[in-house]
Length: 221
Image (cartoon, rainbow, N blue to C red; front, side, top):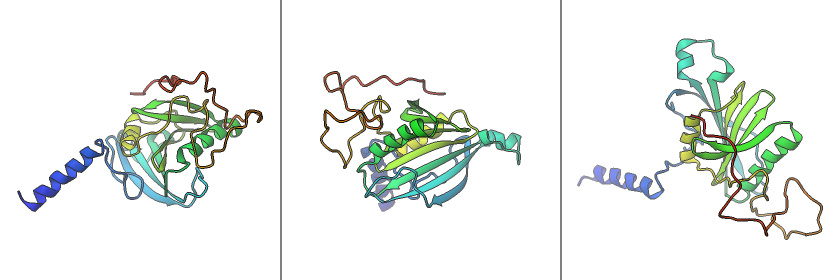
């Protein structure tokens, strides 16, 4: 067996050992065409949307254009022909899921967005709509992913599926209504503390970890 054949087999075995998931791209986003969506732009970002205390992060974005729209209306693209992907990469996983959920809840309560949860492309996500925008948002190990854009009413399931292979969602069922996911800042719950909608106290007597809250919505095709 040649050295190159051996390396190729080792690479395949490495992917299989990881459950068949390709690794995250070096710069966060996929800088290539993805099926009917053509890659057009990469940009690093200075600001991190979901802040996690004591956890350094960097953010990247990519823009994709519909192949059909580009062929049929060259030079006359509209908002619905474009999808943007934001990936935030953290130094460590501590607190990422918790702060992503807290961020989504605050958008619903303070910014006037409609926030829901569903599955798209096989991944459990939070959807955010309002103010002329539509996004799918989820947390993965050491990452937060957001896909969507302005002037949209949905996101392509194939794009979410592609990114989900690299960044599998960690969102539990009922994430918008249940207790916040565990984080490094957890403290013992005071039973006499006033109700906090951002961090509701779990009902441990009625909680069944084998039967999470059903998620509304259907997988778009």
